[in-house]
Amino acid sequence: MSRLLKIIRPLLTLAVAAIIVWTLWQRLAPQFEDLPAHATQPKPFDAAFIRLSPREIATLPIAARFDHPLGSPNAAMTYNARPFRIERHLGDDLNGIGGENSDLDDPVFAAGAGRVVYSGVPGPGWGNLVILAHRVPDAECPGDFAVVQTVYAHLEKITVRPNQSVQRGEELGTAGTAGGQYFAHLHFEVRQGPYINPSVGYADAPLNRIPPHAFISQHRGAPDDQGNPPPFLGAEEVEIEAQNK
Ligand SMILES: [Zn+2]
Image (cartoon, rainbow, N blue to C red):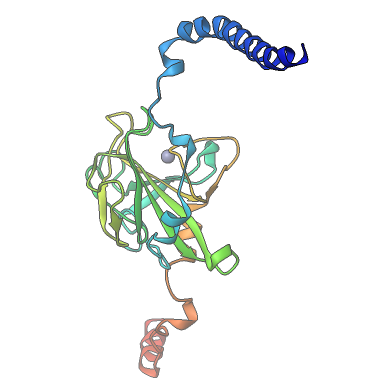
C-alpha cells in the first residue's frame, strides 16, 4: 500500500502543478494577446535613457581649451541676445551683430575637441541639433576628468556625423532659424555629465546646464599671467601721450 502511495504522490503533485500552470496560462494568455501593439513591440530608443558607457567616456577626446562657437575666436561680430538664465533660458543665444538674419548660414565651430554624440532634429523647437561630448581635465573629478557636453541648436545645416571626432574650431554646421521659427542665431549650451538627452532649452531650474560664457572664459587657455606680457609702455609713448593732452 505504502509502495503504491510512493508512486502516486509525485504523480499527483505533478498533476496539481500542471493544473495550476494551465489555469494561470488560460487566465493570462488572452490578456497578452489583447495588449495593444505598442505595448509588445520594441520602441525606437528614447534619448532620455542614453548614458555614455565608461568605455565611450574613456575614449572621448580631451578638451583642455574651449573657444566661442560663432564669430571670431574672440566672438567678435556676435553678441549674446539672450544670456543664460534670462527668462528661464538654459543657454546663450549667440547672434550676429547685424541682428535679424545677418548670421544666417555663418559657420558654427566646435567649441572644443570632442565627439558628436547627437546629431539630428529632436523636436520642433530645436531644429537641427548637434551635441558634442568632451573630456575636460578636472582634478576634482574621479579619474581627473569631467564629462562636459556642448550643445548647438537651430542649425541651418549639420556637416558632421554621429560618432565623428572633431577638433576645436572644426565646423559642425551653420547658424540657422530652426526651419524659419526664429531669426537666425545659435542656441549654445554647456552641460555637465554623461547623460545624452536633447531635453529642453528653457526650464525653471538650471538642470545640468552651466553658464556657457563663463565656461568658455575659464577654458580659454593659459592663465593671463602665463601669456605674453602686454607691450611695455616706453618713454617715447608716454611723451606722445603727454603731448596730446
Ligand atoms: Zn536659446
